[in-house]
Every structure is written in C-alpha cells, then in structure tokens.
Length: 235
Figure (cartoon, rainbow, N blue to C red):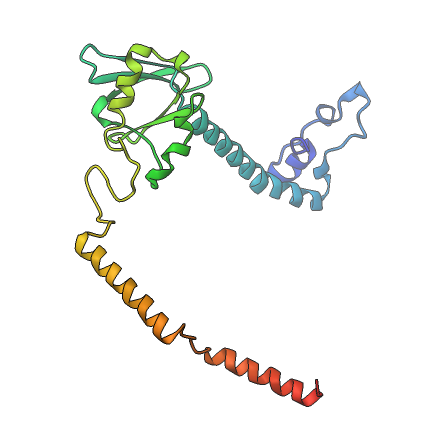
C-alpha cells in the first residue's frame, strides 16, 4: 500500500504543499499511478491497518523469534570441568553468531525427568541418539546435550551422568523415592486378613449362591415405560 500520498499529507497534516512532481514521478510516465489513500474510505481502512494490523504483526514476528530462541538456544556447544570437577563451564549460543559462557555448580545440576518416574525409560535421554536435558536447580536454566557418545569425552561421561542423577537414581517405583517413601504393599497381618476375607467370601457364595444386586430406580422406571408402550401398540 505504500506511504501516504504527498497530497493527502498536505491536505490533512499541514498548511504547506509539496510539488506534484515529487509524487507522480515527473517524466517517468507514472502520473496515473496513485496511492490508495486518495479516497476517504481507503484512508480509514489503511489507517486501521497501520494502527492495528501492522503492530500486531510485528509483535507476532517478535514472539515467533523469541520462541525459536528458547527452542534452539538451549543446546550446549561445549562444556568443561574445573580442576576439582565441582564447577562446569557451559557454552551455549546466545544469538545467530554469538556464544556465551555459563557457570554452574555440579551439585545443582540434575537430569530432568517426568513426574511419573516409571516413564523415564521411554524418554529421549535413554536412547543412544536422543537428547539429554539437564536442569540447574539454582538458576532454573536448562541445557540440552546430544546423547551420542561421539560428542562426549568418554572418560568423563559416566561420572557426569552419575552426578546429575542423584535424585532419580534407581527411580523405578513410584512409591519409593530418595526422600519420601509411601507404603504400597500390605504387611503380614494385612495379607492374612485379606486371605481370611477371601475364604469367607468363597464359602458364602458356595452356600447361598451368587447375589443379584437390585436394579436402580431409573432403570426400573424406563423398563416400565417401555412395557406400557408395548401394551398400548399391542406388540
């Protein structure tokens, strides 16, 4: 749609006038090519476009760019230990051509796993060519590593995996955690009580037969209605 015409600017926004040759191209032969805002109706339409549509589109593009930034810039390009191996220096991209160093303490780093710990075996981090996600419990940052061994120093890989799985090591039972435990299995007394109840239930069934529960009132009502319908039509 282009910028507003010079004539429109002169009529609406100022007392000065601008020579037409700056708008019609002078001897370029484009005198008949006019901007869309030569009419009041088009001015309103494109005024709304410039006031609402273009800013909304700009914000959409910005949000899309930020989403791509968060989605792609968590990958680690390089990671090194300090001498004591209690601090790691992580390099991650912070722009299209930039790289920034981040410093983390090892005891703050933990592998990110789902709430259902039994689903850990299905995660991408458990595959040879998957993606391993490490979270810092202090800064809330996340780092993504390629799980393939060719990207790792194999002398340090197992130690790093061990140190970043302190809270989730051997997490195969949802009732048994590193800190909290939930009793999910019956003890000896409860097991004996369950066996006694089962024996008494089997004896009662063999003596009296299977019990037939009564139908709910709604079902009885609808059956009565259907029966009366059949009586009326003689079916």
